[in-house]
Image 1: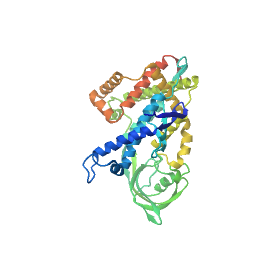
Image 2: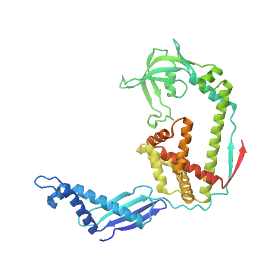
Image 3: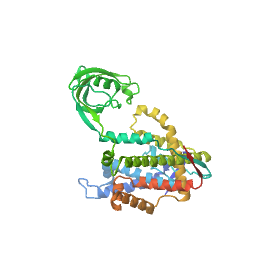
Image 4: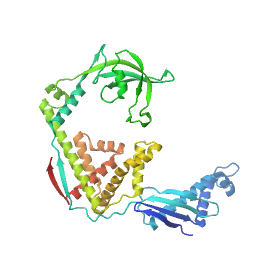
Amino acid sequence: MSPITVEKTAEDSASKSLHVTVPVDRVREAEARALKYYAKRARLPGFRPGKAPDTVVRKRFGDAIRQTVLEEVIRESWETAKTNESLKPITDPAIRNLKFEEGSPIEFELHVEVRPELKLDRIGGFRLERRVPPVPDAAVEEQLARIQEQKGAWIPLEGVKPSPGNMVRVEVAPIENGVAGATQPHDLVLGQNQAIPELEERIMSLLPGEITEAEVRYPDDHPDESRRGQTRRVHLALHEVKRQELPPLDDALARESGDFESLDALRTAIRQDLEREAAREADADVRQNLLAQIVEANRVEAPHSLVHRLLHGYAEMYKVPQEQLATFEQQFHQIAENQVKRELVLDAVVETHGLRATEADLDERINSMAAARGAPAGQVYASLQKANRLQELERVLTEEKVFDFLLKQSTIEEVKS
């Protein structure tokens, strides 16, 4: 039987395009197998199972036979291409420019993304600064104020117009051709950018129970580009106004907020949380700086195909409309390029030095998580599996091993802010 031929037509470090030709005799063999398959299973009026003439089977199952042939030859071609070209694909191939005509070879293009072969000549010997800023008293007091607000009670007000900081219940409906649309109550706190400024101004001009119509203009920086600068007429009803009464900052509030004996104990816990967060951010900055130096030292390039793929993923995640896609890709291109370089470096270190997280690493982390939650390890594992987060956890553990390995080969200097 004649061999399937695979000819490389284009490539970069992360993708390859291959022209595939499946000779006629292989196509006929695949058609004969498909015909036999459908003939044995066909239930056709006037014929016993498996006894219908080939011409009848072809007429009845022509499209299905053609599809079966295509699937078979594409599968065989893909296996041939992977072997002949020593491919390490990271996705399934895309099929393009398919030609399938009676009595002719089947031809098509295979486009596949592959894992780039990245050699890192230098991964250590860098100098890094770790800077952990002190936690100011104002940051602790800000967190206390948030807790105070969360515990605050909202007290109804009668006969007064609302002001910034008040909570209001309003109904807002667009007016089209003199007719108000459907209304729905909304609760919002004035002065917190929960509504456009002109609408808040109109609300603050009303007393509870009052209804009005007004024109409001959307600001030029409104998140919805289609509404920027536009003026709309709306139906507006103010139903209720409330002010917030904050509890005193005292030991009682601390006890209500958790297992704290006093306000000082709560302040200490808040400061410790903020210090831990500052330390995590400092560690993240060190990692980012290290990767940037490795990328620069090794002149790592981000293949266009991988950058484009990542941008496409971003666009889908953020549900970017087609007409805004070009602007979006331009804005996020550098971010995507940096992310691709980061992943390439990490993957190269993982493969070269065998640092991938093991089942034992995964079990150890899950056991730690279970102990912290006071839950059985099997329950935590099942929860992660149900949420499809096991792969994410494995990636986190792998990155931890990689950075632990890399940071030991460079100098980290603690810098006081």
